[in-house]
Image (cartoon, rainbow, N blue to C red; front, side):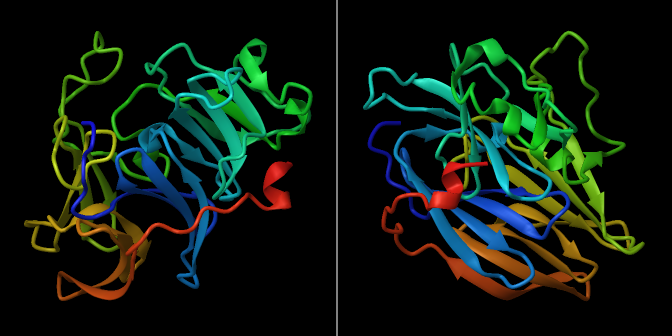
Length: 284
């Protein structure tokens, strides 16, 4: 809603599937975003782009190596020649478009990186490229449209549908009319399982794109403990989880005695200062 004031920053995370890097989207107030690259080995958090408009993190994708970002955004253009709705390819954690596609509306599910390119990359809708058509063949990744499914980004990092997840109606082309339950087992053969379900539309604090992820941890005894203070979580290694808390912090938690014990955190107390993208973020 217009003029919305947030009690805490809202956070959504994209994890690189083949590198210890995560991209953090932070909403400081309505239509005011900052992006940060999180090194999961050193816990260094590097600030990147600021964006004033609407971002759709659930429809974004980080390349498996953590270097590139595909994102969907909406912004009344300062430049009348730039589209209001567009998809862009950039170098994370920046939003400077190397490629950009004009979008007709907000129904797109976004794009992702299915595989490295070998030769000329597969890129959807080349004829719709608004920017970068002359350099598109330098893209190191193939690009595909994301298939409409709940929690698509979480599936790309190893979450799978639980046995008790509601089945998808084959006629529900946007996968909207159910509540899918995903899970990811503790690495290294542990019996504990992290579960996630996407809450209903307009879930109040912690929501991103008007939704919030809800997590639970199933212990060795089979009982599930709600993790109500977390809005994004994943296994970091056998003994730790990482993610974001309801009060707007990045966190790392140790799994001790079946409970999560916070061992590290990073708070976004104020918006970073806006700065131009570095030279390396303006080219492939």
